[in-house]
Amino acid sequence: MLAVYAAKIGGDHPLANLEVGEQPRPEPPPGWALVRVQATSLNHHDIWTLRGVSGAPLTPPVILGCDAAGEVTAYGDGDTAGLPPVGSRVVLYPVVTCGRCAACRRDQWEACRSGRVFSEPPLAGTFAEYVLVPAGNLLALPEAVGLVEASCLPTAYLTAYHMLFGRAGLRPGDTVLVQGASGGVATAAILLGRIGGLTVYVTSRDEAKRQLALDLGAEAAFPQDRETARALIGLTGGVGVDAVLETVGEATWDLSLRAVRGGGTVVVSGATTGDNPPAQLRRVFFRRLTIAGSTMGTRGELASLVALCETGALRPLVGARFPLREAPAAFAQMARGETRGKLVLEV
Image: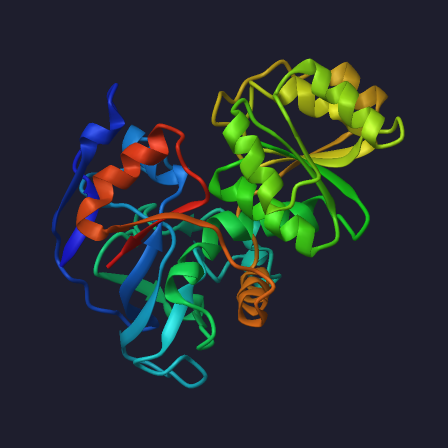
């Protein structure tokens, strides 16, 4: 089968580790399904894998990709009652846990120490014609939801949804600052925030990206500088925003702590500009701030996103589509920071 994989890892030029070629087609063991991938989307996680950063030791070749939508081709031995029939259109829930530990038994997926996403060994990634999936990670897709839009949901939109409504606990009428304006998680947060009745502010160093955020429904867009905190405090009656979604890291951390209201929440799910900013602990405890880590989301939250797409309330922003063989061009675009929404590989 054709696949996109890391032939090696590390080094100064991670994209040089990327190759497109043939890899063995897998066969599903008991309790697993074989899915024919039809659409799959890129995430920064894929570039981190090329760099050699992973939640599990990496031994090339590593098939990349966390997200996919496609068609169930076969199941391994075992009971398939209640599962999507062979031939069904499905989207993959990307978090695979052990299913046995105390955390899994309490449905606390984030506490499972064996939890992995696709492309983290021993799991293969989704940038391939076929991928093995635990049967419980399949969600049936309604006919009204396209495969391309569904492939955008499992990482970026699920992460944004969980940050907004799970970790920050935002409700209609609340305010939120989204750091960064045009990537997958940021555009998802803008769209989902507006659907959820939030007032969404964004930042970006790039004027065109700020305009994109406004076009998507952001209330206002600002450069990533210290004066922005003052502007946001003014727009919120001298208080500050209820929450900040932080995926940028060192470059915006000071702004995040200054812009959030006393007792508010800064939700962190990434650090693309560096993961070790000055903590400013004095500011954190004097202003009673909550710093909340966030990774992915629940299976039920993914089902909610599918339902929003089915009703037409949500339409994921797709920046560009590429054939699977042209994955290196998609990776290059993402690495240059030129994304306007999600980049999708069509298989």
